[in-house]
Length: 309
Figure 1: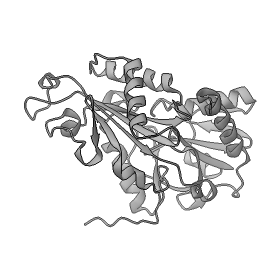
Figure 2: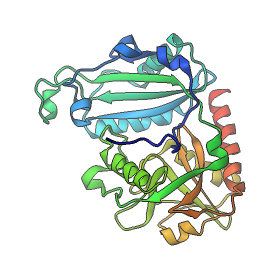
Figure 3: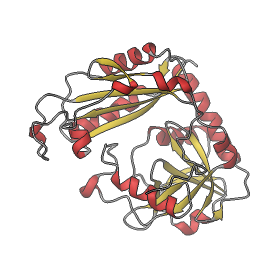
Protein backbone atom coordinates (compact mmCIF):
# COMPACT_ATOMS: atom_id res chain seq x y z
CA UNK A 1 0.00 0.00 0.00
CA UNK A 2 1.28 3.47 -0.89
CA UNK A 3 1.71 5.83 2.07
CA UNK A 4 1.04 9.51 1.41
CA UNK A 5 3.27 11.99 3.23
CA UNK A 6 0.97 14.87 4.20
CA UNK A 7 3.98 17.11 4.91
CA UNK A 8 5.02 17.14 1.27
CA UNK A 9 4.21 20.22 -0.79
CA UNK A 10 3.12 20.56 -4.39
CA UNK A 11 2.72 23.59 -6.61
CA UNK A 12 -1.02 22.90 -6.54
CA UNK A 13 -1.47 23.07 -2.76
CA UNK A 14 -4.48 25.23 -1.95
CA UNK A 15 -6.21 26.43 1.18
CA UNK A 16 -9.00 24.10 2.31
CA UNK A 17 -12.42 25.39 1.28
CA UNK A 18 -15.46 23.39 2.43
CA UNK A 19 -17.59 24.96 -0.31
CA UNK A 20 -15.90 22.60 -2.77
CA UNK A 21 -17.79 19.68 -1.20
CA UNK A 22 -21.03 20.93 -2.75
CA UNK A 23 -19.96 22.29 -6.13
CA UNK A 24 -21.80 21.70 -9.38
CA UNK A 25 -19.74 20.26 -12.24
CA UNK A 26 -20.47 20.68 -15.95
CA UNK A 27 -20.76 17.33 -17.75
CA UNK A 28 -21.91 17.29 -21.38
CA UNK A 29 -24.48 20.05 -21.13
CA UNK A 30 -25.66 19.44 -17.56
CA UNK A 31 -24.62 20.77 -14.16
CA UNK A 32 -24.25 17.81 -11.83
CA UNK A 33 -23.61 17.68 -8.06
CA UNK A 34 -20.05 16.58 -7.34
CA UNK A 35 -21.10 13.08 -6.24
CA UNK A 36 -23.08 12.56 -9.45
CA UNK A 37 -20.62 14.04 -11.95
CA UNK A 38 -19.49 10.94 -13.83
CA UNK A 39 -18.59 9.81 -17.34
CA UNK A 40 -18.88 6.37 -18.93
CA UNK A 41 -16.24 3.74 -18.30
CA UNK A 42 -16.22 3.51 -22.10
CA UNK A 43 -15.09 7.12 -22.39
CA UNK A 44 -11.87 7.47 -24.40
CA UNK A 45 -10.39 9.73 -21.73
CA UNK A 46 -10.91 7.19 -18.96
CA UNK A 47 -10.00 4.20 -21.06
CA UNK A 48 -6.99 5.52 -22.98
CA UNK A 49 -6.10 9.02 -21.79
CA UNK A 50 -7.38 10.23 -25.17
CA UNK A 51 -8.18 13.89 -24.57
CA UNK A 52 -6.88 17.38 -23.89
CA UNK A 53 -7.35 19.73 -20.95
CA UNK A 54 -6.74 23.30 -19.84
CA UNK A 55 -6.32 24.86 -16.40
CA UNK A 56 -7.62 28.41 -16.02
CA UNK A 57 -8.10 30.89 -13.20
CA UNK A 58 -11.00 33.21 -12.52
CA UNK A 59 -10.30 36.75 -11.33
CA UNK A 60 -12.96 39.41 -10.84
CA UNK A 61 -15.44 37.42 -12.90
CA UNK A 62 -13.07 36.99 -15.86
CA UNK A 63 -10.90 34.08 -16.97
CA UNK A 64 -7.29 35.23 -17.19
CA UNK A 65 -5.64 34.93 -20.60
CA UNK A 66 -8.64 33.02 -21.95
CA UNK A 67 -7.74 33.57 -25.61
CA UNK A 68 -4.26 32.10 -25.13
CA UNK A 69 -5.69 29.03 -23.41
CA UNK A 70 -8.24 28.52 -26.18
CA UNK A 71 -5.57 28.88 -28.85
CA UNK A 72 -3.55 26.08 -27.23
CA UNK A 73 -6.59 23.90 -26.61
CA UNK A 74 -8.05 24.07 -30.10
CA UNK A 75 -4.63 23.64 -31.71
CA UNK A 76 -4.14 20.50 -29.61
CA UNK A 77 -7.59 19.14 -30.45
CA UNK A 78 -7.01 19.70 -34.15
CA UNK A 79 -3.61 18.02 -33.97
CA UNK A 80 -5.15 14.78 -32.68
CA UNK A 81 -8.35 15.06 -34.76
CA UNK A 82 -10.81 15.53 -31.91
CA UNK A 83 -13.67 17.43 -33.49
CA UNK A 84 -15.93 19.85 -31.63
CA UNK A 85 -19.09 21.43 -32.92
CA UNK A 86 -18.56 24.40 -30.59
CA UNK A 87 -15.93 27.13 -30.44
CA UNK A 88 -14.14 29.28 -27.85
CA UNK A 89 -17.18 31.51 -27.28
CA UNK A 90 -19.24 28.45 -26.40
CA UNK A 91 -16.54 27.24 -24.04
CA UNK A 92 -16.58 30.65 -22.35
CA UNK A 93 -20.34 30.38 -21.91
CA UNK A 94 -19.93 26.94 -20.32
CA UNK A 95 -17.31 28.21 -17.87
CA UNK A 96 -19.27 31.33 -16.94
CA UNK A 97 -22.48 29.34 -16.48
CA UNK A 98 -20.72 26.85 -14.21
CA UNK A 99 -18.95 29.53 -12.17
CA UNK A 100 -22.19 31.48 -11.74
CA UNK A 101 -24.06 28.35 -10.61
CA UNK A 102 -21.41 27.91 -7.91
CA UNK A 103 -21.38 31.57 -6.85
CA UNK A 104 -17.76 32.01 -7.97
CA UNK A 105 -16.27 35.32 -9.06
CA UNK A 106 -12.61 35.13 -8.06
CA UNK A 107 -9.97 32.77 -6.60
CA UNK A 108 -11.46 29.90 -8.58
CA UNK A 109 -9.62 27.37 -10.72
CA UNK A 110 -11.04 25.43 -13.63
CA UNK A 111 -9.96 22.14 -15.13
CA UNK A 112 -11.61 21.92 -18.53
CA UNK A 113 -11.40 18.43 -20.04
CA UNK A 114 -12.33 17.38 -23.55
CA UNK A 115 -12.01 13.76 -24.64
CA UNK A 116 -12.80 11.92 -27.86
CA UNK A 117 -15.93 10.65 -26.17
CA UNK A 118 -17.68 7.38 -25.43
CA UNK A 119 -16.50 4.32 -27.35
CA UNK A 120 -18.59 1.50 -28.80
CA UNK A 121 -16.05 -1.11 -27.73
CA UNK A 122 -13.15 -1.09 -25.23
CA UNK A 123 -10.41 -0.81 -27.85
CA UNK A 124 -7.94 1.78 -29.07
CA UNK A 125 -9.16 2.82 -32.52
CA UNK A 126 -10.43 6.43 -32.42
CA UNK A 127 -13.24 5.58 -34.84
CA UNK A 128 -14.90 3.67 -32.03
CA UNK A 129 -15.79 7.01 -30.38
CA UNK A 130 -19.06 7.54 -32.26
CA UNK A 131 -21.11 9.94 -30.15
CA UNK A 132 -19.04 13.10 -30.11
CA UNK A 133 -16.63 14.57 -27.62
CA UNK A 134 -17.07 14.52 -23.86
CA UNK A 135 -16.79 17.96 -22.24
CA UNK A 136 -16.30 18.38 -18.48
CA UNK A 137 -15.56 21.54 -16.51
CA UNK A 138 -14.61 21.29 -12.84
CA UNK A 139 -14.36 24.70 -11.16
CA UNK A 140 -13.29 24.86 -7.52
CA UNK A 141 -12.82 27.61 -4.98
CA UNK A 142 -9.05 27.54 -4.94
CA UNK A 143 -6.45 29.85 -3.43
CA UNK A 144 -2.76 28.84 -3.35
CA UNK A 145 -1.28 28.45 0.13
CA UNK A 146 0.95 31.40 1.02
CA UNK A 147 3.62 29.28 2.73
CA UNK A 148 4.91 28.13 -0.64
CA UNK A 149 5.98 31.69 -1.41
CA UNK A 150 8.10 31.95 1.72
CA UNK A 151 9.44 28.41 2.04
CA UNK A 152 9.65 27.39 -1.60
CA UNK A 153 9.46 23.92 -3.06
CA UNK A 154 11.99 21.07 -3.12
CA UNK A 155 12.91 19.43 -6.42
CA UNK A 156 14.75 16.23 -7.23
CA UNK A 157 16.21 15.45 -10.63
CA UNK A 158 14.51 12.29 -11.87
CA UNK A 159 15.45 9.63 -14.44
CA UNK A 160 12.17 10.09 -16.35
CA UNK A 161 12.68 12.57 -19.21
CA UNK A 162 10.49 14.68 -21.44
CA UNK A 163 10.77 12.81 -24.72
CA UNK A 164 11.12 13.61 -28.38
CA UNK A 165 8.10 15.01 -30.25
CA UNK A 166 7.74 11.89 -32.40
CA UNK A 167 7.06 9.73 -29.32
CA UNK A 168 4.57 11.96 -27.50
CA UNK A 169 4.99 15.67 -28.02
CA UNK A 170 5.30 17.36 -24.64
CA UNK A 171 3.48 20.37 -26.08
CA UNK A 172 0.22 18.45 -25.81
CA UNK A 173 -1.62 19.17 -22.57
CA UNK A 174 -3.11 15.72 -22.85
CA UNK A 175 -4.90 13.37 -20.50
CA UNK A 176 -2.01 10.96 -21.07
CA UNK A 177 0.08 12.14 -18.10
CA UNK A 178 1.77 8.87 -17.15
CA UNK A 179 5.20 10.21 -18.09
CA UNK A 180 4.79 13.07 -15.61
CA UNK A 181 3.20 10.87 -12.96
CA UNK A 182 6.20 8.54 -13.04
CA UNK A 183 8.47 11.57 -12.61
CA UNK A 184 6.38 12.76 -9.66
CA UNK A 185 6.60 9.33 -8.01
CA UNK A 186 10.37 9.24 -8.52
CA UNK A 187 10.71 12.68 -6.90
CA UNK A 188 8.59 11.74 -3.89
CA UNK A 189 10.57 8.54 -3.41
CA UNK A 190 13.71 10.72 -3.41
CA UNK A 191 12.20 12.85 -0.63
CA UNK A 192 11.32 15.87 -2.77
CA UNK A 193 8.06 17.61 -3.64
CA UNK A 194 8.30 17.55 -7.44
CA UNK A 195 10.53 16.09 -10.11
CA UNK A 196 12.94 18.13 -12.21
CA UNK A 197 12.91 16.54 -15.65
CA UNK A 198 15.68 16.70 -18.23
CA UNK A 199 15.28 16.68 -22.00
CA UNK A 200 16.51 13.80 -24.21
CA UNK A 201 19.94 15.45 -24.43
CA UNK A 202 20.41 15.86 -20.68
CA UNK A 203 19.63 19.57 -20.46
CA UNK A 204 17.32 20.93 -17.75
CA UNK A 205 13.78 21.12 -19.07
CA UNK A 206 10.73 21.30 -16.79
CA UNK A 207 9.18 19.74 -13.71
CA UNK A 208 6.52 17.06 -13.75
CA UNK A 209 3.83 19.73 -13.31
CA UNK A 210 5.23 23.16 -14.21
CA UNK A 211 7.66 25.08 -16.37
CA UNK A 212 11.03 25.86 -14.79
CA UNK A 213 13.23 28.98 -14.64
CA UNK A 214 16.52 29.89 -13.00
CA UNK A 215 18.15 33.25 -12.30
CA UNK A 216 21.93 33.62 -12.71
CA UNK A 217 23.75 36.93 -12.25
CA UNK A 218 20.64 38.94 -13.00
CA UNK A 219 19.63 36.88 -16.04
CA UNK A 220 16.51 34.71 -16.27
CA UNK A 221 16.98 31.37 -18.03
CA UNK A 222 14.47 28.76 -19.12
CA UNK A 223 14.64 25.81 -21.50
CA UNK A 224 14.44 26.17 -25.27
CA UNK A 225 10.82 25.05 -25.13
CA UNK A 226 11.48 22.22 -27.58
CA UNK A 227 10.54 19.51 -25.07
CA UNK A 228 8.07 21.18 -22.72
CA UNK A 229 4.46 22.28 -22.75
CA UNK A 230 3.82 25.73 -24.18
CA UNK A 231 2.87 27.18 -20.82
CA UNK A 232 0.73 30.30 -20.95
CA UNK A 233 2.27 31.59 -17.72
CA UNK A 234 5.74 30.64 -19.00
CA UNK A 235 5.27 32.84 -22.06
CA UNK A 236 3.84 35.70 -20.00
CA UNK A 237 6.95 35.63 -17.78
CA UNK A 238 9.24 35.73 -20.81
CA UNK A 239 7.26 38.63 -22.29
CA UNK A 240 7.22 40.53 -18.98
CA UNK A 241 10.98 40.18 -18.56
CA UNK A 242 11.59 41.52 -22.05
CA UNK A 243 9.25 44.46 -21.50
CA UNK A 244 10.79 45.31 -18.12
CA UNK A 245 14.39 45.08 -19.26
CA UNK A 246 15.20 41.86 -17.38
CA UNK A 247 17.55 39.75 -19.53
CA UNK A 248 15.77 36.50 -20.38
CA UNK A 249 17.02 33.57 -22.43
CA UNK A 250 15.44 30.40 -23.79
CA UNK A 251 18.46 28.12 -23.98
CA UNK A 252 20.06 24.80 -23.18
CA UNK A 253 21.66 24.65 -19.75
CA UNK A 254 22.80 21.86 -17.46
CA UNK A 255 22.39 20.86 -13.84
CA UNK A 256 25.82 22.41 -13.21
CA UNK A 257 24.41 25.88 -13.97
CA UNK A 258 21.17 25.08 -12.18
CA UNK A 259 22.81 24.12 -8.88
CA UNK A 260 24.75 27.40 -8.96
CA UNK A 261 21.71 29.58 -9.67
CA UNK A 262 20.90 32.57 -7.46
CA UNK A 263 17.16 31.88 -7.71
CA UNK A 264 14.84 29.34 -9.29
CA UNK A 265 11.08 29.28 -9.72
CA UNK A 266 8.26 27.38 -11.39
CA UNK A 267 5.45 28.82 -13.48
CA UNK A 268 1.90 27.57 -13.91
CA UNK A 269 -1.63 28.89 -14.14
CA UNK A 270 -2.50 27.83 -10.59
CA UNK A 271 0.53 28.99 -8.62
CA UNK A 272 1.74 31.72 -10.99
CA UNK A 273 5.39 31.79 -9.86
CA UNK A 274 6.48 29.37 -7.13
CA UNK A 275 10.01 29.72 -5.72
CA UNK A 276 12.33 26.72 -5.52
CA UNK A 277 14.16 26.27 -2.22
CA UNK A 278 16.42 23.36 -3.13
CA UNK A 279 17.29 20.92 -5.89
CA UNK A 280 18.71 17.49 -5.13
CA UNK A 281 19.29 18.60 -1.54
CA UNK A 282 21.31 21.64 -2.60
CA UNK A 283 19.95 25.04 -1.46
CA UNK A 284 19.33 27.47 -4.30
CA UNK A 285 20.93 30.86 -3.65
CA UNK A 286 20.88 32.48 -0.24
CA UNK A 287 17.11 32.54 0.21
CA UNK A 288 16.67 36.03 -1.21
CA UNK A 289 14.64 36.17 -4.42
CA UNK A 290 14.53 39.75 -5.70
CA UNK A 291 14.02 38.93 -9.37
CA UNK A 292 11.41 36.27 -8.68
CA UNK A 293 9.52 38.76 -6.51
CA UNK A 294 9.82 41.42 -9.21
CA UNK A 295 8.38 39.04 -11.78
CA UNK A 296 5.55 38.11 -9.41
CA UNK A 297 4.58 41.76 -9.06
CA UNK A 298 4.72 42.30 -12.81
CA UNK A 299 2.57 39.23 -13.34
CA UNK A 300 -0.02 40.40 -10.79
CA UNK A 301 -0.24 43.70 -12.63
CA UNK A 302 -0.69 41.89 -15.94
CA UNK A 303 -3.48 39.70 -14.55
CA UNK A 304 -5.19 42.82 -13.20
CA UNK A 305 -4.95 44.51 -16.59
CA UNK A 306 -6.27 41.42 -18.37
CA UNK A 307 -9.19 40.78 -16.03
CA UNK A 308 -9.98 44.24 -14.70
CA UNK A 309 -9.30 42.96 -11.19
